[in-house]
Length: 113
Length: 111
Image: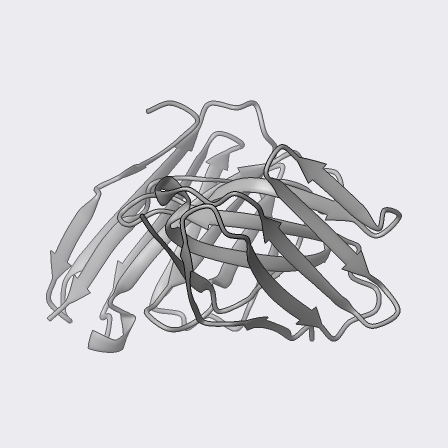
């Protein structure tokens, strides 16, 4: 699929591991987002980047570290995660100006053992 | 911050019937209200959206209504089909940095 891609699609990691999630958008957008989707809970906005600059960090624990080297790529670096961090992590992108449509990637299904 | 509530959490309808999902929001400054459909194992996809300067919007079998005074908005699906079965999420936003989603409605269309 084109648009917004994410790798890996599935990830199993131990609590002492370090891993990274990757997101790439091919839509020419300037804003990118990380969301966490857990069962029975609303999508939680974690990080927002606009023109490569982080504009929002919704009180996310420091064991999640985002990186946005350019407007097309977004990473989420993971270290010393907890089992409760197991979830679907979704990346999204949108045009930078104003609240508007977000286009989601397929997500990375993360399991922390 | 914003609080978005969505009801019902599950909904079953017979094929051909209509389905209605309702959301309320708390921040009167919210001005953009999208609806997303997420099929099992797939990404959320926008199906319709509405801005606060409009009261109703329709796209074929799907419509959204917005009542700014009461701070609620609803998704209406008419002539439902089995392929409409999915989880539907509403959201409210007032800026690109703030997107608040409802908890989702699992819709099942029974053939």
